[in-house]
Image 1 (cartoon, rainbow, N blue to C red):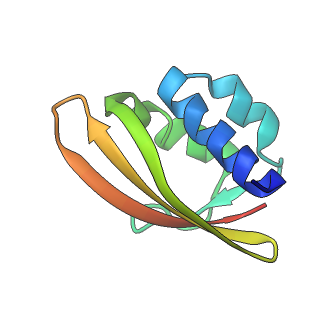
Image 2: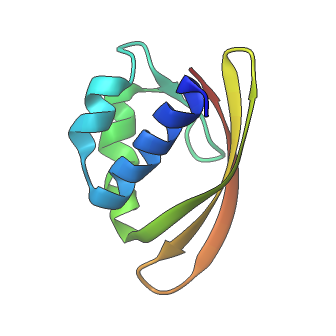
Length: 94
């Protein structure tokens, strides 16, 4: 397993264990996040807007990591506290 994959797994584990500090320390100061709901928001905005939403997730499971250069495509499955499930694929630049 590559260093990128290990780092990504560490970050996903931090969501499961609610260890925000792992992400705060690991994400670059110039980190930005984009989703259908958030357009290029800063690290501070990410923690303000997105971190609280993650408390509704019971677990996440990485299904696939595909690396190419500095980027990795990650497909994961989430189970919410209500028992609902969804899948998502994100692109992470490491």
